[in-house]
Image (cartoon, rainbow, N blue to C red):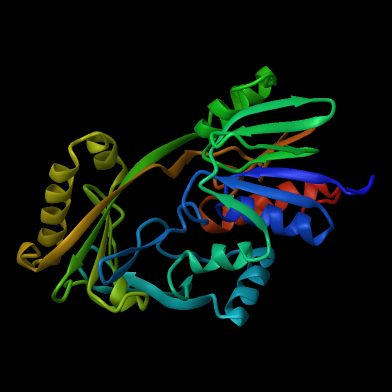
Amino acid sequence: MSENRRSCIIIGAGISGLLAADTLQREGWDVTVLDKGRGVGGRMATRRLGTGNFDHGAQFFTVRGERFSGLVEGWLESGVATEWTRGFADEQGQPNEDGHPRYRGSEGMTSIPEHIARDLDVRTGERAVRVDGGDGGWDVGCESGSRITGDALVLATPVAQALDLISSGSYTLPDRARRQLEAISYDPCLALMVLLEGPTGVPEPGGMQIKGEPLDWIGDNRRKGISRAPALTVHAGPQWSRSHFEDDEAEVIESMTSLAAARLGTDLAPAVVETSLARWRYSWVTNAHPVPCLIVSDDPPLLFCGDAFGQPKVEGAALSGLAAADHLLGRDAR
């Protein structure tokens, strides 16, 4: 490594961490991204179950600001994203178009983070378990026994996990930063995937945006355009998810299937081929940090980013990762 070439460790391969890594690497940094999961994307997750494909985390994303719009235009041109719809069915199944584009990954939401990660050093299935920091930079120990060193450290995981990790070794997090991070909160989401052998009953365009309790969302991944087989994604609302988060899996699946069937006005049970339940412990940010990333230290550099910083959802997570990279590059956020 040349004397002037800087290095960064990024923990978390969601869109925030990946965009931070991509930006730094384009500016000549050596970047290593670690993630405990089997693949990249975090909650921009697509899973195969039997013959069906399921987006079971984030279902779509919107564009509000100019900088994110530029990113999305690039994804559209590359063919990894596409416009899905300009409105969903409401809780009664009635069309509710508002003219505002909603986008999805072309082959599922994971298409976008996989595209960003294609030229990066991303090590999935690599769980970081200890962080040590000092004047010389950062040293991250992994469950596998490997150790990664870098000048800068960016934590792009859910904040509770990031707090546990930064407290695992010799580094002492300043009290003010700890209070700011501990003020961030999330609601969980129980996400049910149901492979069917017949129609799901979800109206066009393949999504019912309920925004309530006990269900928040019902999506048809075939109508969405990412699955050849009828594949239903059901998200429970935050209150219901919290109340039943630790319940027996079979009971949760039965309850959520019945709730979805009642909402759709059809008996799903005879058509069910296979089911799977995902438990997103950190799904909806309920109390965010007000700025796009938290800069804890510049010597050695330590930053926290993700959808809990600044704006919410996919756009907020993307802008947070870009803001972290901007700071490390010594430029103002654009």
